[in-house]
Image 1: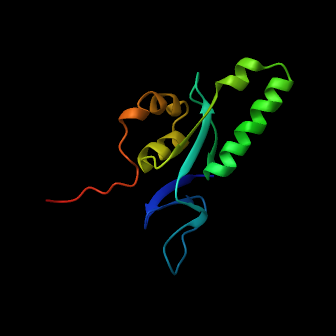
Image 2: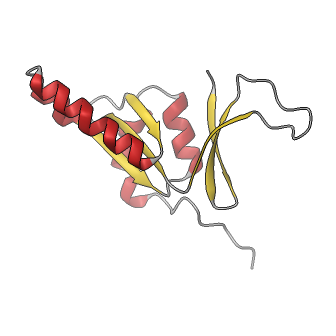
Image 3: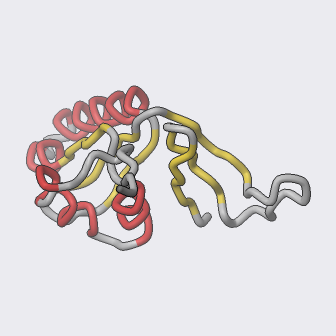
Length: 122
């Protein structure tokens, strides 16, 4: 499944590019519409686990950490990071497409622009 986020009307839209585009709208199947996006990944490797609406992703991470700790995998549990907010859509899409990209994005998080700011021509 090829997923891609697009920013439209102040919301993040997640499209499934593996579906045929609509003959009416020209758009692929919409899988999610949310005002902010959350991404869960391993801090050490940058491997992406989950992405989507912040409430669902934070819930997933809490459950995953609890299960890992119960299994004695404390390091793995502590390695799960969730980043959420108005992230730049190109950075989100790179996390989906490039294995390990989340780690680099996480290290640059403080310098990334607000994901919903639109450049204005002067």
